[in-house]
Image (cartoon, rainbow, N blue to C red; front, side):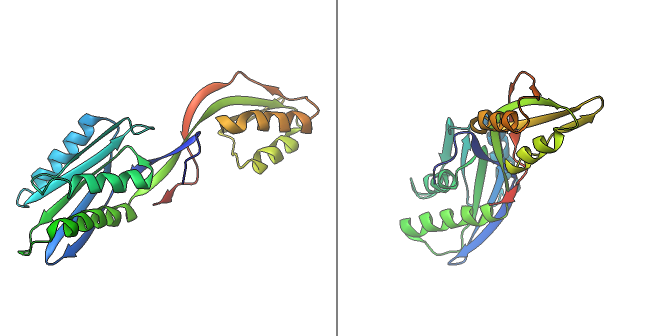
Length: 217
């Protein structure tokens, strides 16, 4: 499914998942990363933690448009671990994410297809235990309204599923809101029409924010 251009998904909290295939254990550890250095440190940390494992394969994606991605088979046959793991991450549409899958060999060779399936499934199991959030690109601005109009403003915000970041009730009411870029003009138009153009809007500032509806993958 294509993502809304104003919204993209990032990893907020990592998780772990494990599968067993013909007595080989595949342990996936997943962590949020924002730079290649952070990914490298996490991979090194997992290799140190699971020093006695035969393989610690890895993959990561960084950037809103997946500007940076890397993967490693760490000794497994070429294309049987890192690439399938990276494809699972890409398919999840989650950004700023790194996964390391540790394999403890169980004594039975799995073959090329078996390895691809096992490493892919391990990543999917790990993703089930992660927490993601929607990052929205948009604008922050103030809405200033008289008390006689505030109910109309709040109704328009509720209809747009927007909760004010801050509210100040004094001689008038000032609400600070953050709105997705694509919804901003429509919201301002609706509020202006509902109040007979009696409200004032401050200058808009570009911003990014986490959507309030955070859910597990």
